[in-house]
Length: 288
Image 1 (cartoon, rainbow, N blue to C red):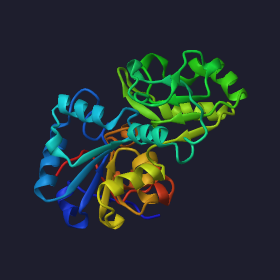
Image 2 (tube, rainbow, N blue to C red):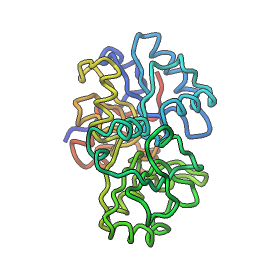
Image 3 (tube, helix red, strand yellow):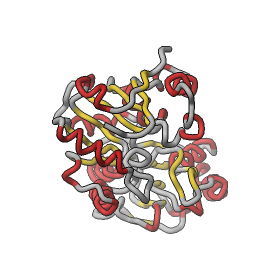
């Protein structure tokens, strides 16, 4: 397995891609503050004629993410579009023409951050507060105080025994919470699997969100598309599976392992452990 090539900025490889799929959390911002160098990089990408689609595992709708980015200081003019796993999930529940949405039922036990219900607005669903009444679980986000899977063990054990399916609209395993990195919805969904529950994941690294993203870009040659993110599991593995070029930012979810590594490319190779998780390039932050 060859080591990824470490670069100092995107300008070094600008002739290698025409389109960018850009992760959001840990890449553009940390949930509270936009990274100034990332904002400058967006401007440089646009000046260079590159098309930029923000591709996020957020369990919220695309419009909400665009509004959040605008509040943080990233105007809509800074990128060409935004697609979230929440948006793909919402469309799937509306159309109900493919698995896992065709047979999940109508009574929904909704788990989201801050009580947000945008993931089910306008859909023919009944939101239930008692998991025992649910046809399926829809997991879009987690409040910081309930991120630990053990807090859900009793409820999930009974639901798994009833074979209640769970649709996870945010496959991320870790996220930035008030105290640092904490378990994300993907980790809770995996815990449900360990208890015997049936789980369907919507978002990176799974194919449907990449297919939707490429379609939104006009179905370009995948080899001319660069996936940029901070996760080997989601951004790199997902991008590589679709034949995209990939760039890993080390100062994100893997910062504990990669921060300060004297040889970032070699450290990334060790952490990746397999060719399908190995990025084409690495650098510390999103810079031009």
